[in-house]
Length: 340
Image 1 (cartoon, rainbow, N blue to C red):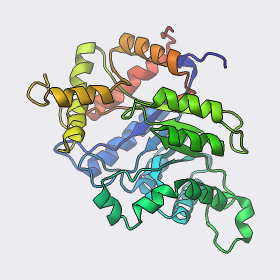
Image 2: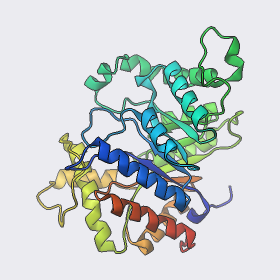
Image 3: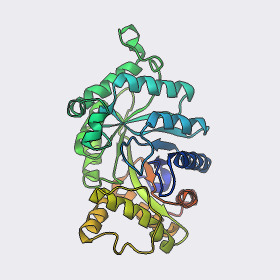
């Protein structure tokens, strides 16, 4: 495999549609569209949204609806799910929803699929599917989706219209070797959630590459990794902006979730030793700093991972600072300043 440098691969975005302290979901959606429009002009390849439920800090629960909103307000960037949590849904409903999206926005819609519920167990039950059975049925549900999208399904008693016969790329999302095996077995592209689950990242992508079986959809392995990037004009400013993310991650660790908080000058008093250690472990693939520092860190990351595409998420309180973070990131790629 020829070595790939970070400046040679596509950059994409995962937007977790953050609800910020003092604002609401309507503000989040406006900010997401503005971000999507800006990064489209910057040349990012994809703009994905993730399904989460019952979280004060995330507004993307109706993921397919929000995908339509973003796709309708942009022109060329691919828009998709990172991902749809398939245990929460009937495969037929997903096929119909994404068939509709792909009919409205041809050649621009991606369908990333995850096995987890994207929420707690109580909420998973409230979503009206048996979570334990659905999670175990995930491989069969993925195959069912492929069947609904196939033109050969037209003689079936159950058909997805719209959806049938459309070329909608399916991705397997995951954070474990189980997801890697499934993506390899089905010959589908693989997106790893290294932004919050770094432990098995290198092991999983290596297993995927070694086990990959070419399919009609994909002839060779394709790995995308999601990482956290918080970039600014100075390291000091980036570190300050990152405290919003640190507070959010601490809330995940402690179970005290809140909307995304404004940045602070210091995390002293906001986390203990245990919380800090847990957050730092979760942040292994988090890159914070100015252009020079991000350049060096991403080059080192790519030197080890050799991914095919980089997806970035950025938990930044101020929407303009979030946009600027992506501008800094893209300038690194455009100006070819990275060294390996």
